[in-house]
Amino acid sequence: MSNRHHAHLLLSFIGLFIISSFIPIIQATTTTNVETCYNQGELIPLYYNKLFSQRIQLPHRYASQPFICPPYTDEDWSHKSRFSNWLVVDQDWRGDWLVKSDYKISTLDNVDCNVLCTKTWTIEDAMVAKQLILDDYQVEWWLDGLPGATASYTNEVNTRAYRVGFPLGQIKNNQAFINNHVTFNILYKPCESNTDQVEIVGFEVYPDSVANGQCTRTSIDYTMQEVTERRKSVTFTYSIKWKEMKQLTPQGRWDMYLMEPNPDTHLYAMINSFITVLVLLGVVSIILVKTLRKDQPVHEDSDYRIYDDFEDVVGWRLIHRDVFRRPMYGGLLAPLVGSGMQLLLSLIATIACVAYGSCHPAQPGALLNFASTTYIWTSVVAGYYSSRIYKVFRGRSWFFNTVLTSILVPGSIFSCLMIESFFAWSLRSSRAISVKGWLVLTIVWFLVSMPLTFLGAFVGDRRERIEHPARATQMPRFIPDKRWYQTYSISIAVGGVIPFAVVFIDYDELLKSLWHGEIHLMIMYGITACVLLGIATACVSVILVFFQLCNEDYHWWWMSFAVGGASSLYMFIYAIVFYWIRTDIQGVVSGAIYIVHTLMGCGLLGLATGSLGFFCTYNVIRRIYSAVKVD
Image 1 (cartoon, one colour):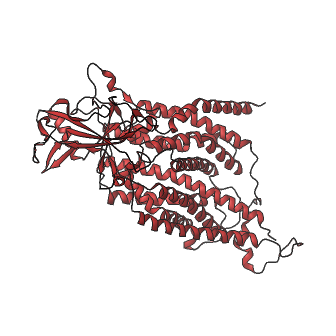
Image 2 (cartoon, one colour):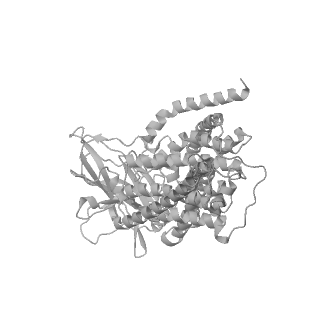
Image 3 (cartoon, rainbow, N blue to C red):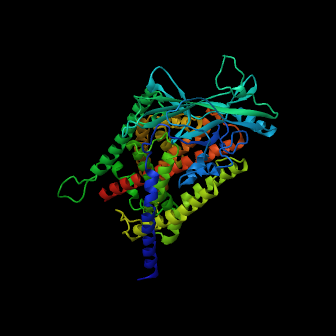
């Protein structure tokens, strides 16, 4: 056996060993929160998390702020430790930094007024607090796995909606006031397994500013705790109220974090999207029926057919000897397509996870954690499809193609995270990825993702080359001149605008959710929009490439990929317009973070939809030219 085969077998064993070793981690990552029941009087820890602002996209660790009560005492330094999961990168990327606080929350025990501490402020402490209040920073704490939120109520229970976080302070008459008193409104219900225990279903925080540590207000006009640039002492207090929810309308405790958008608007948009997709499917059906039916012989015993007119043999029929010619830069297209199939499978698995209810979109990090985990283990798919397409292009270096596949997309993500972390680190933001995060990211990339990519490439390279219905000639055919509306740029522009129009309403709601701090989402509409986007992308790619073949242009490989991913270009452009018109983001660094996030998201989506358009077009073209009989 050759050294190459020994290397392939070694990589296979390494991949299988890594998969078997990391299965417990994957199971721990993808499991949802189970019911946690508490006995009466049992202490429940409250975790400090972060300060965040929709204006300034730079979160900060709440526990490290100099003007708050420290989250630890001299006798117990264990409170200072950070609580994190194994994939700490996702917490770093969100700026989460959970540290146990000194708040004493006892199950079912109401507290009218407790003093947390009296903190002496220096001039520098007051200046830091005032600047954060002016920048509209919000505070995020966690209790029993739920982020503290402020709620909007009406007379109906099912209209309760949560907005994560509460204001650090208030601004009145150009004066800043610190919210030094909080009221915890903890919603609970009896546990199904044991009615003597309770389960927390909601965590609401209502802040207030009260001077001199007075928890109870004696009048409407009470003195607030002003932030002045001079030395003073500030007393932090809290109250606790437990409220039983006997009938909780939402199915889960995360549903209250979702704000239902206007159903009429989504309904009309969905109807228009369905009509558009049906029209596209009709055009593709006409193309398939026309091309396949016309190539059946007139008589059953005849091997030849008589063409009725000249139009039947021009266009796409004349280039049957060139349509499967190797494209230029095929060594780059194969890794892109393989990586796109990996991303597409990860997106499909994530959508299925949401539809099944295994992960909730309102739960911080749930979707990102599941998608990241799925992306890591689907590296086999990237290596397999990249190797298969590379073999179709008759590539010579299997090893180089696999290495390029394994570093192309992960390296781009790594670079974007590094740029963002540099900005965050320079401004001391918690968004900067920690040393542990970089270490985990590097280990997962080089010891998990890359070997799995080689494993998939090994399997794909051992498969037989895909045979095409027609072989390419040695001399390429001359491509006639095109009209202006037949150029590649116009086709890509048209191919991107139709799928973008299908999901425009849902994409606008997504941007609101990401950059306004409110999750506007209807899960059913969101899943339907994703499905319609995939169908529209596949149909548009097939239609425009077929029109290109009718113009005797056989350079369709890159064209199908570009048309499939063109909708992400419109998404990026609209996100930039959204940034200028509809967000309050301020500062160059915050704008850079917005652009990096948007570029990374649209780029990954473009790879997924581009690969979808490529393979759909590839299968249709092989089907057409396998059935054609040209005299």
